[in-house]
Length: 120
Image (cartoon, rainbow, N blue to C red; front, side, top):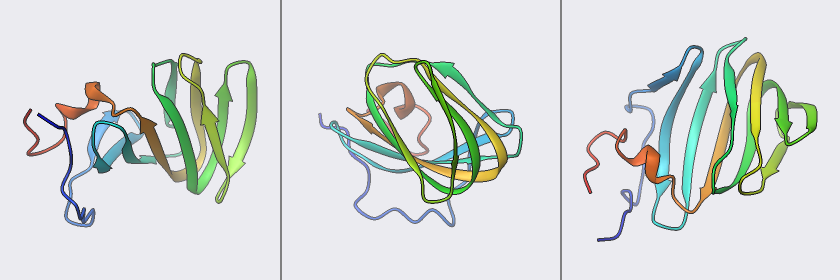
């Protein structure tokens, strides 16, 4: 069975999923090959350092973030982005409240069970 979201996703009525203190997310669409996630950070929110098998690219919609990918750290603002190769440790600290759009390939199977209404 193929994993995939609805064709059109309206996020306004969708509840945020709290994933860590100061960090919550909404799923924006996915299939087996790709997944997009909207992540809101409160100031001081931490995306703990971790790694995964997925390629990831992220767009900074708003706010200010200290982002570490591997051994490199930069301060990123609205309109910036970053790429994370598979199996590279990374994390983020939110310096000013903001939103990131994360895109993963392939789909983050570990996220699927938390999608409201999703069943395999």
